[in-house]
Length: 133
Image (tube, rainbow, N blue to C red):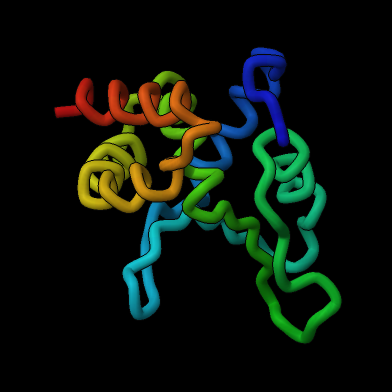
């Protein structure tokens, strides 16, 4: 698991800039599953692998006929990173999108982190979601 507390200021700035510029806090599927997606042209995979190294997640679309590739974070990883995004996303439209999206999906994030091993993570997620109100 990636530890975002060990990221350098450059790594944080790169990730937040790419997410603010190319990312989408979205949801979909039968259960309206929250996710973060960053998409770029198929000739720029290094940026997405850098995001993967810094924040986790997975890169999709490499080696296919698609013209775009994507980096995605799943619900459990997103729940863990809510405090990070809350702290570091710049004051822009993407931050507003993030705040509304996190509020909409707060119960799913709570469920994703609900286990006896993760009491401190649940507390952090709950505190950050409460602060966003």
